[in-house]
Image (cartoon, rainbow, N blue to C red; front, side, top):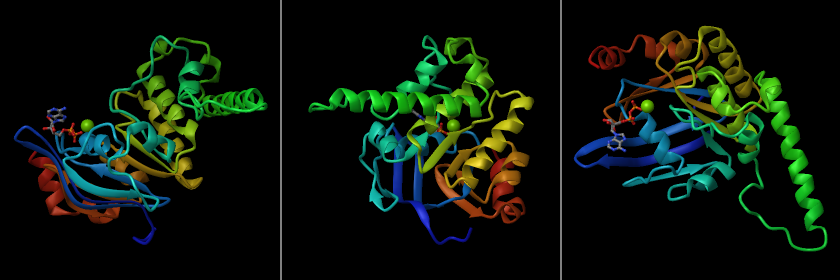
Length: 254
Ligand code: ADP
Ligand code: MG
């Protein structure tokens, strides 16, 4: 996985809150087909960068492309439709809906698309059936199929993380961005989450994830980008990052 085929390229991305510069990234690339970790101390700007890139927050400046298309200025739902999907540090599962309903809400064709013509109804039904089938496949994959009719609010924190990941995959994204997917997940589930992330990559989905656990990061990442005070201070393969004094300082200084 050399630096040859960026699925995401960003330049000059800035976001400030009042006088605080939360993100100021000169240049960032994510290579297609890799697991790339975005690491850095608390407050480094990781979540803000995710928010801005995925259209959940506005940037003050910056240009970025995903699969060669400009994405800056694109609304969040369009970003997702076009294959770049993220999860949140704090899960956003709709707790009063069932697990299956949560999945179906994330499906393509759920945003009021209208079908015209004599076959409109047929097309809609076909899409609905396909969505349901995909939802059930994903729930099975994340071992949530037996809970499909349970209210999402009744799931454990870890199961909600799995639901959120399953939900993100409903649109068959080219890249998933996971903001602290292991946080609050019990150790038994961490291992299966890691396996899911690795198999996503192996199936061709690019993964960009935020994580704090160094063993996890070093174990599954192809590339690591280190953020501190909003800017990229280092990047490289796990072995290079592990021995990078700047990185060690950034963490110990936090
Ligand atoms: P990380 O995810 O790396 O821990 P964040 O992106 O959450 O960091 O935050 C980066 C900085 O921006 C922090 O100083 C945080 O307090 C600040 N920040 C994030 N979101 C907001 C907001 N909506 N309003 C004001 N400050 C914010
Ligand atoms: Mg964060």
